[in-house]
Image 1 (cartoon, helix red, strand yellow):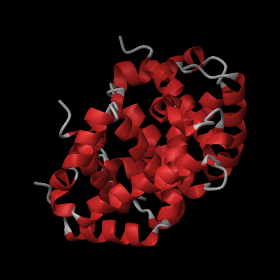
Image 2 (tube, chains in turn brown, cyan):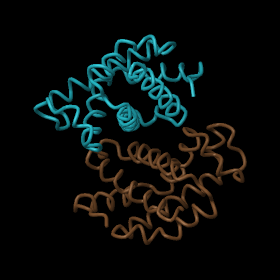
Image 3 (spheres, chains in turn brown, green):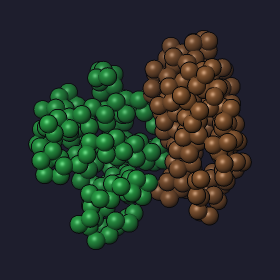
Image 4 (cartoon, one colour):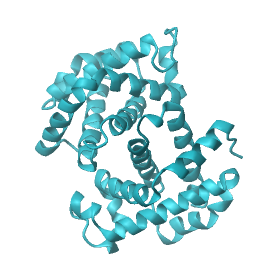
Length: 147
Length: 143
């Protein structure tokens, strides 16, 4: 089971209470689709993803960004057993969506960068370490049901 | 995934904005790397103080960013331009090349913090590609 220090627990709660989730989700997803264009393979039904402007203004990308962030908020609410909380999500990504789990790391990196730009100097090295640990646990939980 | 003409232009334009803050960015990126990826501390066991903002971290952050600035200037032929640095990392320092990616990530995080309005997704992809190309050139002499 994952052990969280008091600092890590408090930091994660703090980050998610401070960030504008309506902004961060869409910004991170669109950044991922721009910086790692091969990730667009999973969004064939989203319409125009031809260039950075199209991706940033695409309403389906924005909507889905919010869905992804809501998924992370679920992990925040279940920090002591994200593995169980994510069981169905993991099956979904493996069996229905067929997402290569290496993509979860790409989106994680984009989330880190967007949260960093939002928090500025408050995103210290220790805060970054806690946030990246949290994302790593979420990613590992999402990978768990793949076979 | 080689650098297009547009990538090179984007990197040069962005690096002009980075230049005045280069030492600061280098120190911050290195500090973060040592805290967030503690295994990287193994390369600096000869330093007295590995804490963020310490003298050796400050000095080395500036050294690293000097290397990156040099690479920007030699962006048209990184392999040739970084030959000496590659030999240094391959034969003397023997840093596992996986660590180049780790440091690159932390440089990007600091760019997002210090230059949030300039570090757009388009700039991000160009800089990410550039740092990857830099890492490849640095690993050239390893084997």
